[in-house]
Length: 401
Image 1 (cartoon, helix red, strand yellow):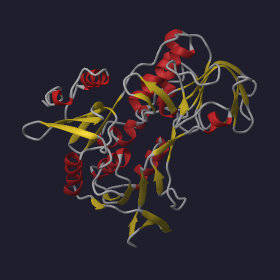
Image 2 (image 1 turned 180 degrees about the vertical axis):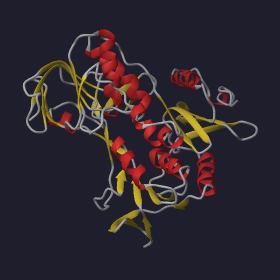
Image 3 (image 1 turned 180 degrees about the horizontal axis):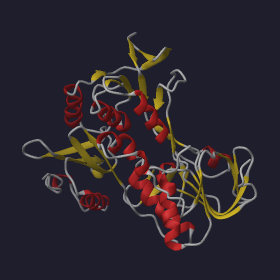
Image 4 (image 1 turned 120 degrees about the horizontal axis):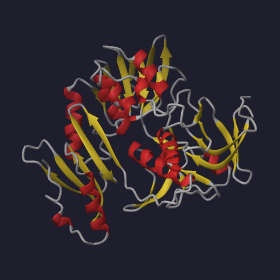
């Protein structure tokens, strides 16, 4: 038991990530005195998650302390406090250990959980997501340390790039021919893959992980062709799944996340959802769920304001971005290499804008080494949706320099 049992709060936020921290800020823009409780399952408070695979590895002045998003003055924060059940009718939240808290308004910002493999349960196998994961990987992945990175998608490629730039000896195992092949057209996926190999990263492509074993300070990964890859640490980034268990058990509507309306309200009165876990109706792209920090920040803030009575529509279409060695990008919408694409390259091939279309309707825009153009990308998606943009007008619509 903690000292929370029987307490009542105006606002309770379940989850300790970026969306939760943004929601506290949103509440305080409207209500500067209401009581706010943030319940995080992790031992750390909310941190700016992109830094865990970007800035903390690449900026010598960056520290984990600087990624903290709540100072403790705006809300009461309880870490290592998993919630086991919510009761929308009684307006209560039950914590692991039995404490029960009553809320006036509730926000579910439970985020997502990494997908796992059949690998040993060891601190040398890291499903990379949290501040604790960063600490472990920092401790284990020193200069010249053999590291096996499983997955070549968004997180897998990003952390492999960061580790390589910190002089780890990285082997990547993934089930495709090219790095990030699922989101980029072949031309860019080939460029990225060459960049990894030129930096000394060993790529084991079109391979499935068949299992793993521990032997002292090494983890050996077995892949489908019978090869065994030994390393001091294995870091896995193969995607995530929304944490909907609490919502489902409470009878809330779920469908690839917790279903919310345009005010971020769930199917239960006084219960909202935001961040990775929320399935919402995007103003430009229709119903979707987004796992990136820009959405967590914007949606969390809007949810917080609405918890406090703002009654505002969430009509923002978020961006996402990444850096891989010397290349970087921003993107809006759906990046799926199975879609029809139109590529517009700068003359020297150092930058490109890629347009992703379904049935000649623009669904996403990749800004490869092109900056400050996400607003224009949104405008084009809106024009295409409304039938005011032909595909033959896309090349040159966003400058590549």
